[in-house]
Image (cartoon, rainbow over the protein chains, first blue to last red):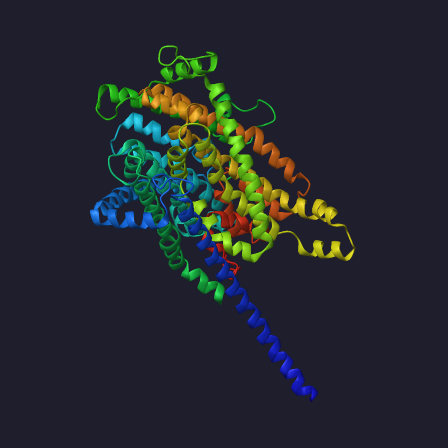
Length: 277
Length: 341
């Protein structure tokens, strides 16, 4: 074997080996991932009807069958629509309020004013807002909306304020030196800088908001996912209960991870272009 | 905007200007907030009584709420009228905290084991990853209702909820902690033939510490929020059960008063337990940017919200776990630089 060809050969095989190793690793990961699914779903199916009665813990196949039944009964779209309407109105308001509080917190006076409000909004359990609004407003529409706002605005505010703390000082100073009016300064310096933080706040806020929406519906609604969950749990129909929660869980995850993420990617395309240069 | 007026060294200023400087200070604004909430509360009561009586079912006055809270604080057994066995606020929180402690302990130990496994082996990671994320995103309400139906009234349902609500946070944090242990230190320790237990003690544990701390903090606060929901549905006593008791009795002043207890409890926990503790945990390495970011983000509210935002500014690997906690889709090992550059 000549040394030159030997060299070339080892280099090729080196790359090839690395690629092979990577491929093997990927295959391993997928295998173990699928194994994880099989193990968990299998254990769930196995436990149901053997260690726990099927009435208590319906297995995955039973849940899928129940989903078909609920789907064909036509209750599903109505319940989803009700919950989603509440969620979007409530979280929309909450996002606006949270973002405004965050933005006016550039002023230290307002920061001090809203500091405790934000802290309470972050630390208090959603349950107390659900119960207070339920007892004060009955089943009027304001109850769930206010509960969503109280529980989630703090998350938005904290994120926006995090952006406010890192505002580009030179730009702000310069705009002040050149007597740029406040509104234009907000529009052209502050808001573009805060955009990623607004998105982060939106995603975190949303992940909490849909949970609180369902929780308030348990107490103070006569429609929606939470209401259906309460009814089925009071009737001890675990299969329906699990189906409702899983259906909405998957849908909310889809909104959170796919829709919001896609929205964000689209919104920040210009930034990616910048970083690609 | 540090344009607040500095206080002059002597009383040379006119009292009016000194008053203005007090009014303009952030501390004054902070005090003003509760006062304005109170004013708003009283105003809305006045509006509802006089102008718009059908807007709400019942809005308790601040005095009623204060009275209800005071009764809970001083009576050994409150409310002989409604239920002679109902206990006051110390007992209910005590019972809830015991449940929280048990569930938290189980979540910590199980979560540490799974997290270590996931951090050390990619196969274990692939096995558990999606399920951990699913449990992380599941609302505590689902566990609470399921627990109450499956285990009946008592302690099991609430503890079960605490475990399932808290465990994903422990797993994710411990896993990230293991992944972030400095590799060079490990290599050097092995090169210098440092015995294994000393590596664990001096390399692994210190670098895991901040992550453990984050795990404890999140698991505790999320577990608490889950616990009160579980007690509403599957408890016979405890803080969550008591607020539901007031709710069922349609005593709005009791519900609002108890809500204040919850808020006070959460704030006190934050102020007197986690903040001093975090200062102590992070004191030994004050210069490391990563931990500074972690700590700063914690100080911002404890809900893990600002932390991901912080990662946008500082590209420090050690805070990546926070980014991932709430954004499970980004954890994919195959594309580690998916954060914004």
